[in-house]
Length: 243
Image 1 (cartoon, helix red, strand yellow):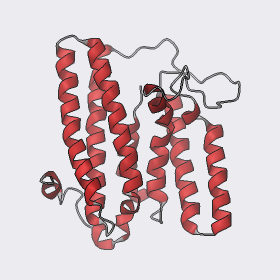
Image 2: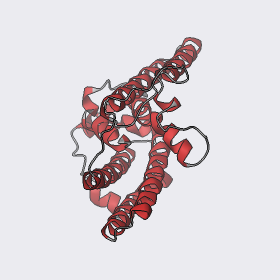
Image 3: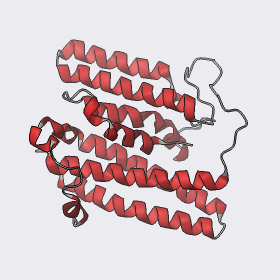
């Protein structure tokens, strides 16, 4: 089970406890969601690996990316690249560490080295209906992340109208996915409900990646002290009415 949207929600929840420096928070968000790129790659048949939790959940790959970004920083000597490397590394390590503790699936944290995968909960199964509730909850958290990203964009000087419309549309799609998922569950169509969940989760993850890359600078809107005092939901009506 992948719970990426839960990680993004926790990042938003503890946003003010993180360093409020250029590029750090968007890099941290990217680091939290980047490890699940292996799952997306396998779902879309871009790779033919046997396990979802492979290269994306590898500490070796995380360290390699960190090293490359440090080299970029040494060449450019701009603090934002150092913030990028630190934020990305922290996010990736937190994701990998959390998955190693929470996930019931094996995780190959030392990929591609020939070490055994970590699996703390061998032969443990989540109750079917509990899994359904968790899946629905995860889609709501995706919707919350889209809303938060719109709020950041509206409060930032780096407004992106196309991104706002995409995220607003994606919020509606999340409701459609949830409704369709629940409908197929009630009809007892387990195979179809699994397809809907996988497709919906892949769609949601792709939108998350687009939101982070296209709205990169907007996530630093808290630099403005006036925005710190604003309620996160102060522009909800404006966001909902976007077309």
